[in-house]
Length: 407
Image 1: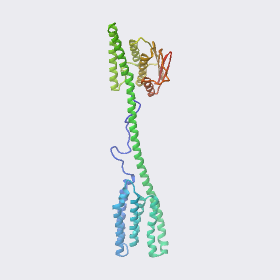
Image 2: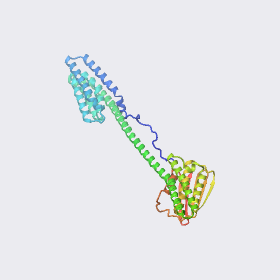
Image 3: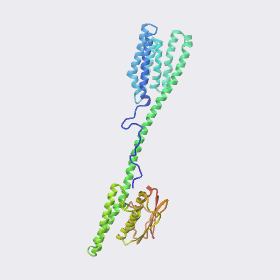
Image 4: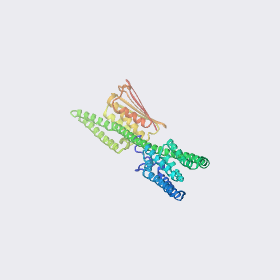
């Protein structure tokens, strides 16, 4: 009977099989930022080269911008791409950018166009509050430069409105950039956690499958091989006691022991192959139950009766296995423990369920006390695996086992 827990069920993966999780979404498109940075650097150098002012001013501004680009390639890029962000290197990097921006604006005010790279870098490398704190004074550098050269009136009419608009745009755009990066990192962390969770679920599923298979094998071994060996020992002992007396009776015990051994061998082969019980492989459930009663009559003086009611007993194999094992275990308990003189089996099959009732007139036992062994526990477990139920009533007048399973 197959275990009811799936083992190693195929699963989709959040990442490609055999590959590590890919980089964050924004890192996959990081090359676009670098292309933007490179184009912006070249354009700014060209603008500064053709701008007015002295040669010293142009060279000084171009030098400041070039150092800023080198500062990004040598240090800033590693700060951005670092897996675990470290805020002090980020702060040092942005402080260097601000110093170079101020130097470049001092030589040539048009160096302020570098803000199109400095502002996004602030939001990429720093916390949001820190980035805003950096972006606002960075955008005020050109204003302060113009204030020093042209006076307050020129700044109020020419620079301040555009600067305020630039600051507002930079803060909004930077906040959006920062949110995209944060969401990308959160999703990456969520994917890693999901991968770990799925690995844990897969491991637990395998362990549950192994435990279920062990329980199934334990029940099969108890209900087939162990009971068969018990019968063999009983029959051999009976034959041994008759060797010096009734040899014909001893021979009959030995023949029955040989037949039991062959059946046990068949059960062992079926167990190894994972097939249905050998008793069901050669006939119907009805035939298998009758053979169990015939063996009981041959081995013991217990009188046995069998009655079938309702529809045909052709049932799904998994249900037939549960019913047959219940009959085997019940008869074994009658034989070994009850001291009964009579046992009756009634099987009732209708459209909704199959009900098995095994009753004997033995000494009974206390159902409230813990039961040693695997028999009753195994029967109850089998019944629950197919959605059924098992009831045991026992007293001085005998024991009744009732098993009901849905069709």
